[in-house]
Amino acid sequence: DEYFDKAYACEKIRSYFSDCELLIEDFNLAVNSSGALLEYLEQTQKVSLDHIQGISSYKIEEFMILDVATRRNLELTETMREKSRKGTLLWVLDRTMTSMGGRLMRKWIEQPLINTVDVNERLEAVGELKDKFMVRSEIREHLKGVYDIERLMGKIIVGSLNCRDLIALKNSAARIPYIKVLLKDSETEMLKRSFSQIDELSDIYELIDKAINDDPPIALKEGGIIKAGYNSEVDRLRKAATDGKAWIAALENSEREKTGIKNLKVGFNKVFGYFIEVTKSNYSLVPQNYVRKQTLANCERYITQELKELEDSILGAEEKAIELEYQLFIDVKDTIASQVNRIKRTAACISEIDVLCSLAEVADRENYCKPEVSISDRIEIFDGRHPVVEKMIGQDAFVPNDTLLDLNENRLSIITGPNMAGKSTYMRQVALIVLMAQIGSFVPASHAKIGIADRIFTRVGASDDLAAGQSTFMVEMSEVANILNNANSRSLLILAEIGRGT
Image (cartoon, rainbow, N blue to C red; front, side, top):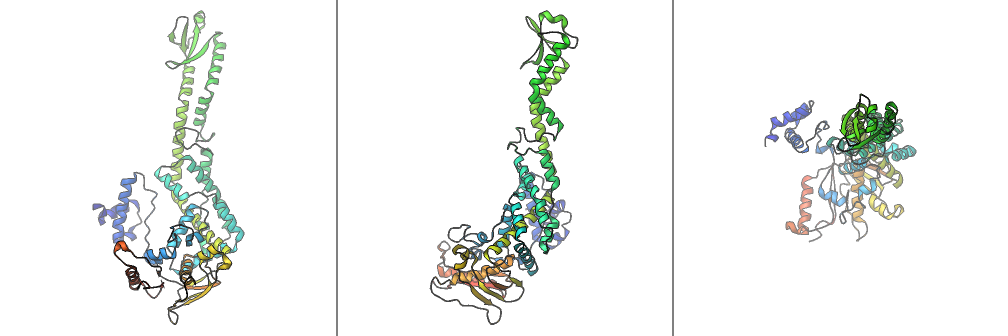
């Protein structure tokens, strides 16, 4: 309980972030829980938490509220029956090229905006990318080579990184300058901002390029991870390990010439290491600097200072090289970890560009129009189509329909018709078009004016919840009660076949 105490939590937050005074003043319970969360991370992760840069607060009111029933009924990220991705709004809109972009796309779909300035900023950026076909295609081509930088940063912080992850980071960094150049002549605010915030990370690229082998082993303690020429000591140790035999042969020849002992030879055993062996008949020619090590029946074995040094070089070289390579790898990793903020900021920009390019690509291919989003109380859709159904059956097969809703004459539309006439499809398409407009996407229509909706409620399809002791009718009534209690004048409601079980 003491970790959730206000004073303790404030102290904990201040120890990490000096500039959090504002937050501490405004959000009482959030402060308590943030302090406890930091304590929890400290105790469980056992790593430095320096990469956690700050606490950002957001209010639920900043986003459109979508309850569980609405997410399920509109099939935003998974279908109702098979729980699959195919047949969802995410499946239609997600043409992202990176994992980071894919995650951000899902987040945008689950959190539509209700601030018209932000929505229109996204729409402008999507529009620009839609019009600039060549720029978009080239950006997407470069994005193919960008790995999941956000996940790589997580690995670096936690320390579970291997050399191949560094190579992935290098290859990603190699693409970033090209993406930045393509954004240079952007005209819309969002793309200009991305251009200014993207860091080319050329120092990171050069460091990894100089230090790490292009095709390193996965294991960090087997050697072969540092490039030749990066560190002279590693090069020397490697040379010692591989050239040892040649060195010994050269020493043997030079000692024979110096001493005149023709049958002098350099040998090795596990007890004494390297030694120089001289037969009895040549004892008189043994120089002063030879130190006797062992006497045998017909020969004596000696060592010299030079041989000792050579032995140290050869025997310890491999272990020392591996040890030193590992140490150099850690240094490279730590250098990159110190730049984690720059890299994360760039990763966020890249994923945002990926999502905007994806939305532009879909708008271009599927013949979507740019909606006019405002705070008016009207929803006007001309030739609206259901994005998912259209994609499933093919573009020309879908029959478009108009929609007009406002807060005066057209507050309510009652849709009637036989089974399989498309009532549910029509109703859902209105909700999806409003939602797509508010995430900053173009919409499947010939023309659309969207007044911002703060919530979308749906009551579609019947299912009894027998486990909770509720009949179909009861489930419907409780869902409608929830809608009536929470909806306001800016909410969009979709009710299908209400009370049909009775």
